[in-house]
Image 1 (cartoon, one colour):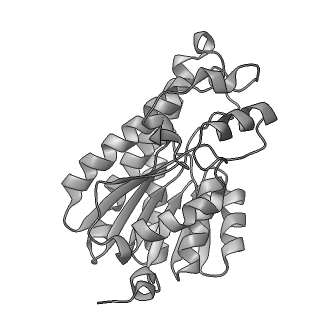
Image 2 (spheres, rainbow, N blue to C red; image 1 turned 30 degrees about the vertical axis):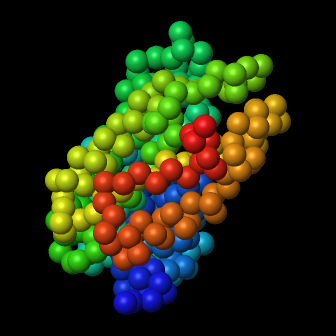
Image 3 (cartoon, rainbow, N blue to C red; image 1 turned 180 degrees about the vertical axis):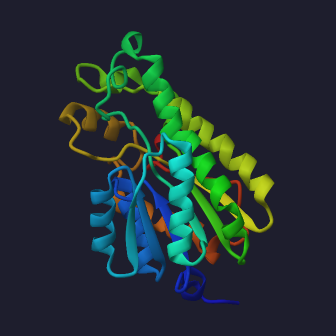
Length: 263
């Protein structure tokens, strides 16, 4: 049998990470780079993409792309594949999140707008479909092609209003809807693209990002591991699902939530 070290080795592999300059995107890019992978960091702002790539070293480069534009997204994917000379791994971490500053988004349900809802679906869900469609041929050329979609526990369970009581935080309806859609997209793609390409998802729980103290306290109290997540908690999941360590795993959703959804 191959050693764990060899199964996790991504030397000579190439990856495209959408949302790669964001919190989880950065963790994913670091995990891949540390295992020897060359990485294309794709994000909305080209400057942020380049900064993220610079932090990874000379084996990475950045690409700016508006993921709400399907044609621009497809063109960015083609450009990344061209510069990488192929593609082995596609990761989609891009998303409008609960703290995204957009009118009609992180507001009480009655004030959430159809436009913000549609924009969230475009970034969180549709762009994953577009990128997969554009990358599938390159991913299928070599053994070990892998796709990883970042969903959320909000795609599994509804938000608990008690967590947000007395704070300015909101849980936008479009976020949960898009993440639930990503989980079904994962299953559909896993059966459609097999056996050449594996498709899996991870569902993060709440990640500590300077939320109000009362929210953090409530979240910790209903999480078995008694803390919120840190970005580095997801590096192992990325390494596993994007490497040969998970060669017989596809269509799976790995929940990384400290046990939040286990109650």
